[in-house]
Length: 553
Image (cartoon, rainbow, N blue to C red; front, top):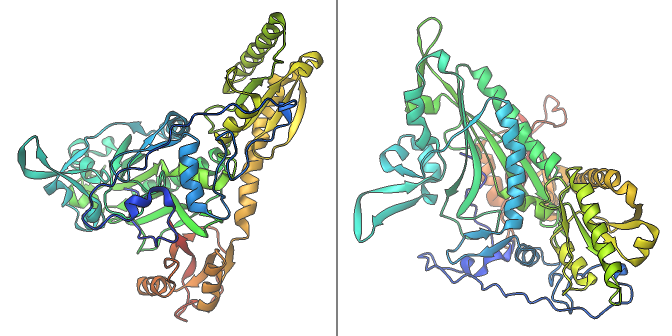
């Protein structure tokens, strides 16, 4: 139902090295053994006279076993693969292309779920759940649709020692699961609109280079499926949902995106048209589809006989939409913000927004130590009362510097330090994860200052991400300019004749020994005026629109 997880062959030189053994598997796949995750035994760092001055681990790792060995700038694929394991987001599983989402990652997905679920319910959408399995006959009902997914469909052919009379497909998407029942439930215009959503998993099997969060054989998502009496109602919802997807990325994950329409070649199989939000990763020079909202028109309603009786008692086919957002969104956020020290989480999506670390003297009297712990508890409760998500790290078997590295690796937006001098001055030290900036805050000001600072961090992270991507689009009027933009790891905005044959030819000609060919990412809704007589950058024919092109995940 969303096209964002469909397979694209990626040359090995460009693919993140998250699962190198899987990438090397032969065509008849024998599931390779997943890389064994080393059990990390954190080492105690030497006692530092001024632990509060510790800035955390740098790229290349350190003697404490924390920090990353790879650099985002120099080796993006290895850096990303190392990061998602070291920061405790995922563990590898013994089925290639499948990953365990650890609590730190799943908590972020729950934040995304809560944000989006609240807003679609305000639009009148209801949650439901449909089965995982699809019969072959039903899957084949819509020819173009099933052809689009056929290479990725996983089939159940046995149970126990018995071979099934008919194989059953595991859903790659749920149009064909849900629409036979739409035809049963919709009879009159009074039954419309029907607006359903489900939070679930899907399986898409055929691809070569799995990457955690970005491309996996099983992933989590939401998929909305709706039916309306009129085209106008359906098209309005398509854009309402697309703007919510923009909100997930820009307002929640602090990732800038471009809203646009997919070309006919790139749109969802069987759709009337597809809209999308597209993100961009400057370090790799590749675009990435963030989420899609499709107007299905009346194609599926005709195939599944979904009709209603209008006010004039005439039979009409409904207009339908489908739309989806996946855990890929977390991968895009990680790629956008993380650095050589680890994750950098936007406060609104961070499972915990601040860590409080007490720094007692080893020789402190019991009553002095207890007073510090009491203050930690008091500060924590005052922040929780302001809906700040707080964690306190009072473990006494790790030094303060080790804790700083640990929480920097996990990306917490803020660190609060409370040492002996802070107790004397009735203040704390706050340190930002995104910039490293520090400030002293009096105890009585903490409940007001921390929420304010978290909002500042959220805004600053979005502004910084936007600044990094704003110079990565080049306007191109010739194929030579187009190739120069790609070689600069940029996107190309071109006047285009909007012909599928041209798109296919451009993809072939832009393929190099080291990089995949470029494709249209979208026809952006916000684009420069297109003067009459403007020529297509490739064919020289009259241009019909602006197209945003790029290499992509």
